[in-house]
Image (tube, rainbow, N blue to C red; front, side, top):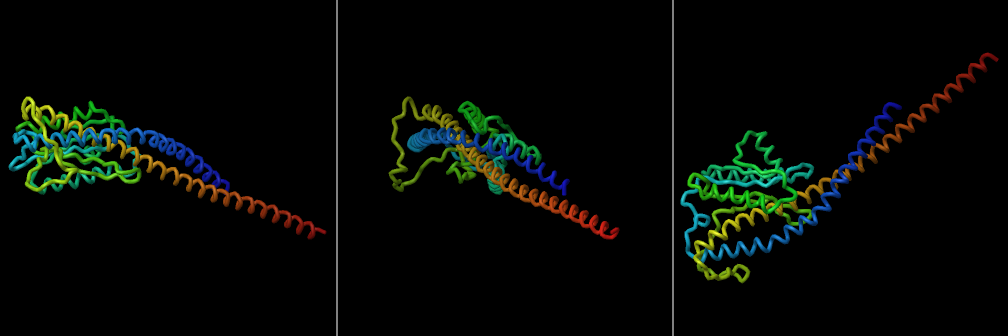
Length: 300
């Protein structure tokens, strides 16, 4: 029983050390999630209004711009997958990778060749382990993205989109932050920009503003569309960062709670083992005393 008791005490000690680590990571994620939420919330109005402005210009200017023209037979598609740089975030990265695989399968069923672009070490490792080709990857910023990184990614995607030998579509797969408990893997088509057409009267919320173009619609689109792509990517990165921190906080809280349960379980078993050892020792002492008493009575 003594050996078993030592083993349980060692398990309790190691579980307590693990609990301290998970608790610290939970608190770090909780402290960062507020700022990440604020950044995502602050970027939402700009991204929304810029999207409305670009849509209005593209819709009412009647200009055939490379970033808004639908190809007759799209054959190649680029998919940007936003994952995390670190683990211990539950099913965060696996969920977005599963959504990316679903989108890839759908695009290939449509006869399109898919090229993958990755952000985050988890996605990079996922494709490397399965020996799948990746055109380009970016790492080291998943929980704190900057606009400079988004601008670099956006320019790379624009260059491959406008290239004659490049892609015909650009999709982004990221995790949309809905609440602290719900983060939803989402796939959107970024390019070509959807142009609103039709004779139906839209709702007030869907009404697009009217603009006068100076110097020309082509120049306006040339200036706005790169900003539109970069701002949308930046917004996706911010949403993904908030989702990653929320998922990590939830996962670390669950790990801390599990560590508490293990400590209670091991403590109870250790106490039972200690009590069994004490009972056995008492039984041995009593048995020895009785044996001595019987031997003395026999001698008398």
